[in-house]
Image (cartoon, rainbow, N blue to C red; front, side, top):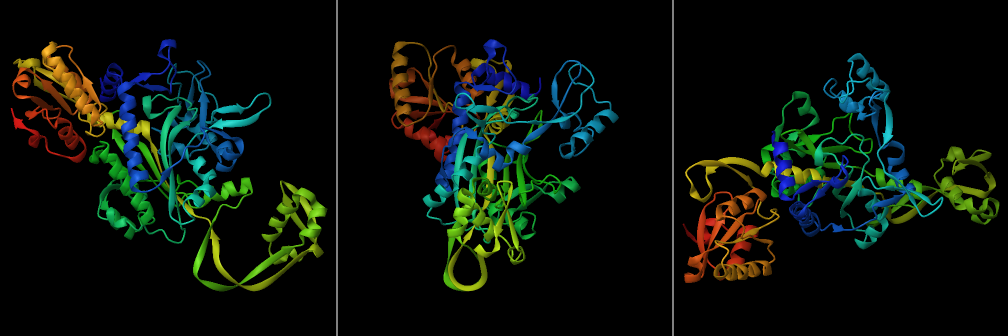
Length: 582
């Protein structure tokens, strides 16, 4: 049993993860988060909110998970959000064609459908399920379609990412932030992708949780005012050039910017922030790297993009965060489809005298001549050159229709005018987090099996499974354990439980089985501290606090116990200072 199987087996047994629809046989690509899993996931999300909303000041919005078709036409998802699919001619199973050949060619995800078919034929790649012959590759759009409203209704899609809601709300957000750059918005929520063959547990899901920030910045100023916070931070950078060498470079973010490895400070700052967040929730530093997209895989809208990748036992390096400078692509795309200018007015410190080419369509004549299309025609005319406007027949295209505008109703000239500012289209820096992948990676990195003395201090050693989760991430933070199920111990134990709950800590009360077995149960789910109430408690009003990682114990007074635990979990107080060592 490899580590993945150990983690998933424990996760199912202890209420972290369950296969969805298990009662009906289940289906791939869906998981339910049980009581402990849901709590662990929320803690990760809350730390993300603290990082981006509280500390960075990027306020959170909530947009619908269903979007109208126009949104995804603008974003490019309707026309280009697909994966190469091929099906077995024998058993009918569907597979991602690039995944079938990724061990044969180095850049399978960059090959065309015909190129993939050629590799499959030349290498006699067969169906992984039945060894049958594979059919031809074709593109499969990953969005879930839905109909908005009854009857013919309106075409809609389940959103494949949370980002588009923030782009569509750009003008509202700009007004909220008083048109001052940089500003950002965040969103945590469900996204949906109809994956062809999700066979990697929670690593590849059809319904998953994203946490994204869209940070709008001045395209002419990509320095970060707080870059010094992470300038000296050493990170594992797997740049385009380093990938050619096959070596990960460990360097400071300031050095990476200075050498031009990372495009600019704002992007480097986001890499530093991502590095900080992932280690805070429990990702091991040596198993975390930032891989730069190579030139042949860089999205057409990005000038630089880095993936935070986490090393896992079964799946190798897994992308969990994408950090990209998306330039002004998204705002321009939505402006073109919505026919609404998406820009910010930036006032100059002093007015400028500027000579500019001005086109003045005569709207009094244009309106009666072209009716409802007059406004769109006027905008098209303003974008034309002198050469185009000097022709006898001025041709414009509106909504795919070519129209002729009489030359005499369009005036144009160069004018020198005083301007106080300009409209600029911000660039977008986007850190996009896959919460489910981070959730699994956090569990795997925390999971450990070790040999320890047997329960109840017997001499024979036994295996102890312990989840060394970060204290602020652990779903259960404190376990309250009466030594025996007797009324004289249960009453003070319940009082201790109430006191700790009032401090806002999540407490588990457990009086089932021997104290050794209860310790082991709590070690397995990652509970940092266990409080034992025994007969000494009745004499001196003290309790035993046991540390999960070291299994050491101290004796501390009940009075102030909740404050003490809070300080150890959230403020970093040392366990040894909590009481008298036993």
